[in-house]
View 1: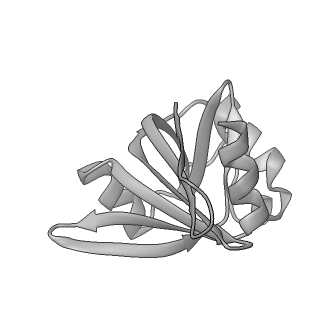
View 2: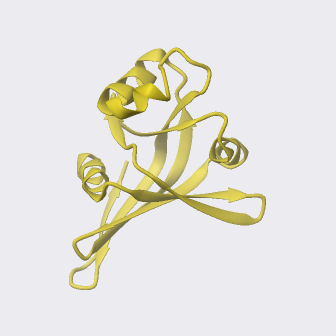
Length: 130
């Protein structure tokens, strides 16, 4: 999982896919963090992505760098604990002007039953489960 997190951090931007009814939605994300042995992302409860995850927590993310891409699929689980939010915001100080571990908007999720597949045109895929 550390390899997955590091790759996505190095990408800078990755793309999160959710479902909005029967319509797929994809948007850029940048927060990725390991806390207590789980891979986390962060958003705000006021955003449509939050509502989409609540309706269907199965998501996929994709990142690309240096001719290699990574797809991570799994189920997101909300972690409403102060400690989880604070850990994410400590890892991304630039977000602290918009989010707080104490506010009602900050939302962090971790991946459950995840599969990460590293792919390229020059080598065999590598799969990691966590």
